Image (cartoon, rainbow, N blue to C red; front, top):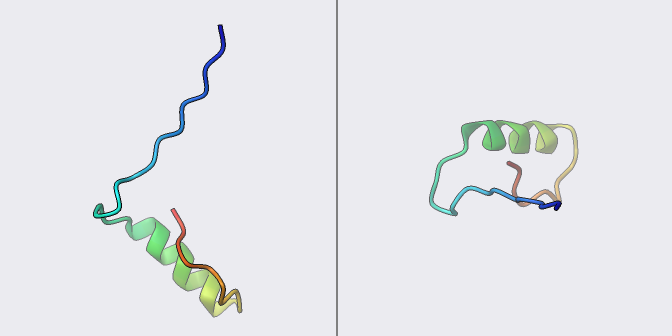
Length: 37
């Protein structure tokens, strides 16, 4: 038996690493990124 499990954070949970990546991508010119986790 095989199973795939996809775990994500709830929308209200703070994700400081995702925010840092999002800001870094914006600084590199990737303006279309809405969210990074």
